[in-house]
Image (cartoon, rainbow over all chains, first blue to last red; front, side):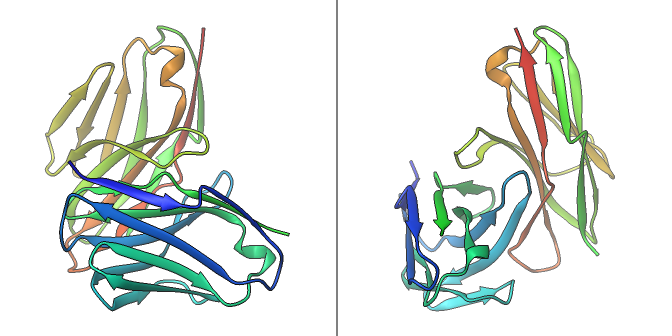
Length: 109
Length: 111
């Protein structure tokens, strides 16, 4: 069966610090991978998606970036965090149906 | 523009009081409609996929239906453990790999 992992589960970072969130998928190959952000009480905002190694599509202009160094690994990064980057970050994978990871709660102070 | 709207935003039910959640969509072409359950602080959990009008799926107290314009998630005799946010999403046939999500319905079932 397939599983998706995200870490860390929670993160508190100062404004201006760098960020690296990691997502890995097990039990499947060549999945489509996604990063979403969910603000409190709001819907899912698609940030990036990837259909293959090194192929990244950005949906929202911002100070975040994504990379896919391996088939089942997806990384979300920032060089300098902003207060507005706080939120709940979700990684997902799909072949048809989309499945989500447990999420990372990021607080930028 | 492709769009998904869920209603109501929030719903409070007494235990055993059946009801329905609505997901209406406007898309250029529907590839699939998905229902998820999300508990606070956790990632969405997949419930159902529906592909064509008239299709129905059931799981325990939940039943999802699909028409050409909307989907319903029927909750029969809910229990407090059914309390969660229910999300609806669509995937369009326009050749992208994106899923469009509604903002969800927050369900609270009171004992």
